[in-house]
Length: 129
Image (cartoon, rainbow, N blue to C red):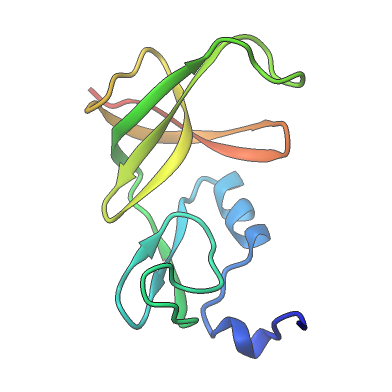
């Protein structure tokens, strides 16, 4: 099977590098399917709902709700100490993110920046309450 061409990726194709650059400059970038309207918080070549390749970049809200959370007590080698991660609901989609401060499920959080550890940057959210 051959690699997809730019034409196969659709006009609004967002690559990981694009997503990462926006994240590092303080913008939560997602994609929205132009066929069914499904939203994803991370780049996708095709819609997970309908399979369409017509995806367009959208800015995601910076305010969301903690859907689930956990504390990592035994961190990977390159990470420093324990930390909290969670899935944050951002409108029609959810995003795995680092949580700062003791944040609980159902709490409103705000995107406050990025953290660079391991393989790359990750979004950071803190309590907005």
